[in-house]
Image (cartoon, rainbow, N blue to C red; front, side, top):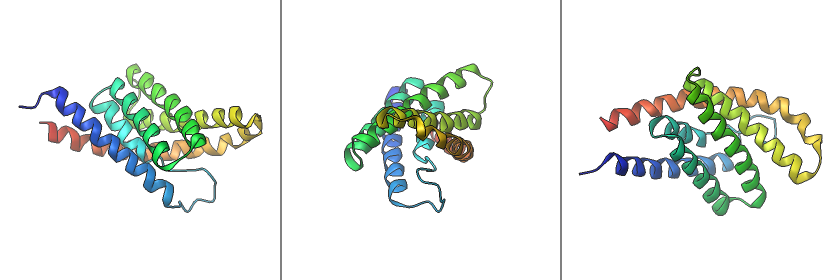
Length: 167
């Protein structure tokens, strides 16, 4: 008989793999948006789902695994640094807002999208040694809000499916 701990571990493994697949597919399919660097962040569907279905610690682990493994398989050191900076700021911000109980899943996802872009800009400023890249932040913040809404809606649908299968 499976225990809840086993079910959670399996779900984390599945969602880590799904997040990696989403990251890879997103990197090879161009988005018809004429703004460089803007992505939908579909891997965050899995991260938000883990955060709400299983817990904060597991969401951090899945996020770190996804970033590390995706960078090792399909990226480079810079992609790892940008993703880690954005991913860590995003996940810890989402955990904090979820604990505050005043935000919906969509609101938490929007904050995650915005914080991810802020983290990546901070990493770019640090790596490039220039704050000029920060002028790009307003465009990324708007993109983070829009994609965060979409990701939050889809993550909510995924969460309904996960909870339906756990019963």
